Each structure stands twice: as structure tokens, then as C-alpha cells.
Length: 166
Image 1 (cartoon, rainbow, N blue to C red):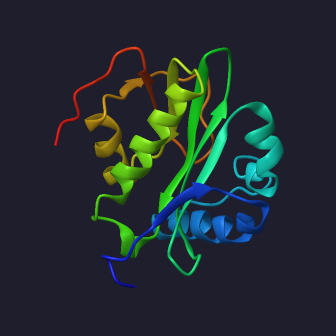
Image 2 (tube, one colour):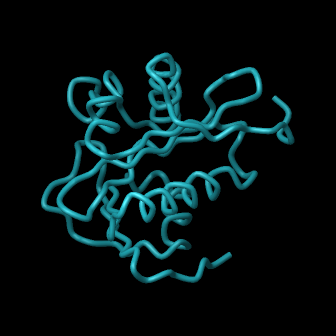
């Protein structure tokens, strides 16, 4: 696929769910991480109840032909806190600023939805993602528990607008 093509960032629909699963599970496999459709990834079976009905969001990055090549979601947790989830990008679209685009979109959306803090869990093997999070001001923290494939937790307080380190 041409790297210069226009990509549309839009809310996910029920019709996108199979493509989102293919993207997420494919990226996980690429990094040697297992999908967990029964627990951690069960949210992908019903985006409406897992995200939209709870006041969150789930967006996809799609090509002009409609192919889903990226995703990012915000899932409300406790009051004022959301979890950044399912931020994945197909290999051929990495290294083009699309990850920064997804993250900047998610942080702007979190602010617009009234969240004061964004948390996330990740795996240390996802080095590019970790660098991206840290450049955007996420701080490593201790989590009460982590999902089975994650070994790191981060948070970002949205009331402080961090300088993005290039």
C-alpha cells in the first residue's frame, strides 16, 4: 500500500469489528504476544457496550477503500479516568507519523470527554509504542493488576499539557 495515501480517522462501527480483531490479533502475533479473546480482548466483540455506552470511544484509521489499518480506544474506568486501549497500527503504516496521529487524537478526545487522567497497560516488547507514550508525557506507574500479556503500566494527567519530545 502506498504510504502517502489519505487515511481517514473515524469512529468504529459494528461492521468494523472483524477487521479490528484481525488487526489487533495480527499485531500481537507479530510481537509474539497472545490474543486473549475470552478476557482482555472480549471488548472487541461488542464495541457498543464496552466503549460507547460507557462514555468512551473507539476509532479506526482506514484507507480510502475502507481497510482498517489502525485503531485506538478510550475505555472509562473510575471517575475522571479512562484507559487507552487497543492502539494498534498495521506494519506497513508504521514509521509515518500515524502512531503519533492516533495518540494525539486519543488524548484530545479524552480531554473533550472530560477525562482528567489516561492510563494504559503495555508489554515491554512494544518498544516503539513505549517510546511514543513517554515522548507524550506518560509516566510509568504501578498497577493493581496487569492483563496477562502486559508487564508495564503508565498514566498521564491531562491537566498538565506536556511538551512532546521529538
